[in-house]
Amino acid sequence: MVVGSNGSMQLMETEFSKTLGEMVSLHLHHQKSIPAFLSAVTLDLFSRQTTI
Image (cartoon, rainbow, N blue to C red; front, side, top):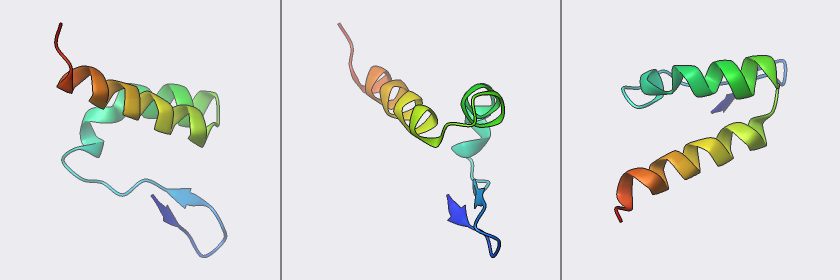
Protein backbone atom coordinates (compact mmCIF):
# COMPACT_ATOMS: atom_id res chain seq x y z
CA MET A 1 0.00 0.00 0.00
CA VAL A 2 1.14 3.49 -0.76
CA VAL A 3 0.06 6.72 0.94
CA GLY A 4 -1.01 9.29 -1.64
CA SER A 5 -0.22 12.99 -1.45
CA ASN A 6 -3.68 13.68 0.01
CA GLY A 7 -3.30 11.03 2.73
CA SER A 8 -5.30 8.37 0.91
CA MET A 9 -4.13 4.77 0.72
CA GLN A 10 -3.58 3.11 -2.64
CA LEU A 11 -2.97 -0.57 -3.30
CA MET A 12 -0.14 -1.00 -5.79
CA GLU A 13 -1.00 -3.26 -8.71
CA THR A 14 1.17 -6.37 -8.77
CA GLU A 15 0.60 -9.93 -9.98
CA PHE A 16 -0.32 -10.84 -6.39
CA SER A 17 -2.64 -7.90 -5.79
CA LYS A 18 -4.51 -8.76 -8.99
CA THR A 19 -5.63 -11.99 -7.28
CA LEU A 20 -7.21 -10.12 -4.35
CA GLY A 21 -10.17 -8.58 -6.16
CA GLU A 22 -12.87 -10.12 -3.96
CA MET A 23 -11.07 -9.13 -0.74
CA VAL A 24 -10.44 -5.61 -2.03
CA SER A 25 -14.09 -5.22 -2.93
CA LEU A 26 -15.41 -6.53 0.38
CA HIS A 27 -12.94 -5.17 2.93
CA LEU A 28 -11.69 -1.97 1.32
CA HIS A 29 -14.60 -0.75 -0.79
CA HIS A 30 -17.62 -1.94 1.19
CA GLN A 31 -16.33 -2.15 4.77
CA LYS A 32 -13.68 0.56 4.34
CA SER A 33 -11.41 -1.39 6.70
CA ILE A 34 -7.69 -1.73 6.05
CA PRO A 35 -7.20 -3.94 9.16
CA ALA A 36 -9.92 -6.36 7.98
CA PHE A 37 -8.32 -6.48 4.52
CA LEU A 38 -4.84 -7.17 5.91
CA SER A 39 -6.24 -9.85 8.23
CA ALA A 40 -8.06 -11.53 5.35
CA VAL A 41 -4.90 -11.53 3.22
CA THR A 42 -2.87 -12.96 6.12
CA LEU A 43 -5.40 -15.74 6.74
CA ASP A 44 -5.57 -16.54 3.03
CA LEU A 45 -1.79 -16.80 2.75
CA PHE A 46 -1.66 -18.94 5.90
CA SER A 47 -4.30 -21.31 4.55
CA ARG A 48 -2.40 -21.64 1.24
CA GLN A 49 0.74 -22.70 3.14
CA THR A 50 -0.96 -24.99 5.65
CA THR A 51 -2.31 -28.35 4.64
CA ILE A 52 -4.03 -30.81 6.91
